[in-house]
Length: 315
Image 1 (tube, helix red, strand yellow):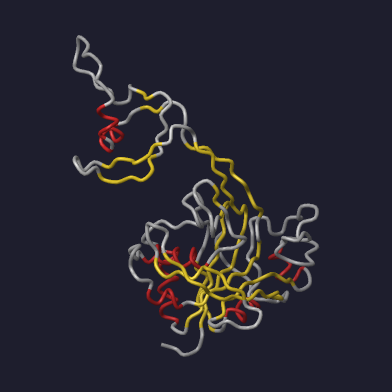
Image 2 (cartoon, helix red, strand yellow):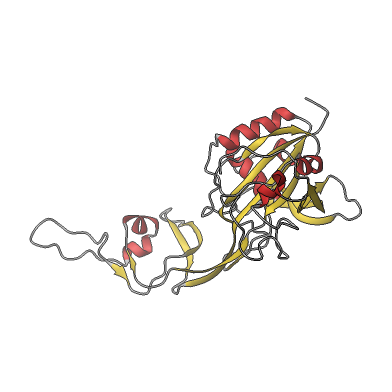
């Protein structure tokens, strides 16, 4: 084990991302950037760790995120359920009350018919709540069933790309995580199952601290690098690069413009002046949502020189 700090760089990019902090079923928010809990969960899934298993060394990683392309907030007006509900075999197997309420039709002249795929429950909405095993039959039944469509509001980040830094003194641990991200044992998501990642994730392990490494690497490229930006691109309050005037942001970082500045949030192991608390330190993952504790992070304006080291990655 080396005593010097090393950083694993991870690229999180895709059509959609969603990193919830306080969302519930009806209102599901997204943070403006990836959360440590979400990224550590991504690494745990790649390593194939059981959900209830202690996080071990993963919990000791220092976390940083650089907002190369912050993306655009996207609201999804979402409805679940409503209308008629065609019965399927699994519906009758998992709730005996539904099975008892469906009488099979009279057999025709030919072979006996069944209600599977034919019977419908008018106005029934299949969103079971408080599911538990029936004490008599052992079948899974719901304590309450909503009979009207649920309306939910879900937020995403569209076309965003973030550079993540995970810092540890053991480069071997970081190399194992990097290998797992490119050869995951489970499917990986950018916050939700509807948000798969695109292209390369693990970008290598390098010596240094998160702040040093962030300043020495060019902006992540996008599929539109080299094309003229849209009017006003790169100048709004949510832009990832400041002072960008032509070409893509990664092109500017490769020398087509002046130095590029982006926001980064870097975790501090101890509370220090200027550091803010965030209830985002994973303690345990679980089906109930897991347990989190406070961690501390500081916001930095990172200046990336035009000659910063570029990328050779799959988008």
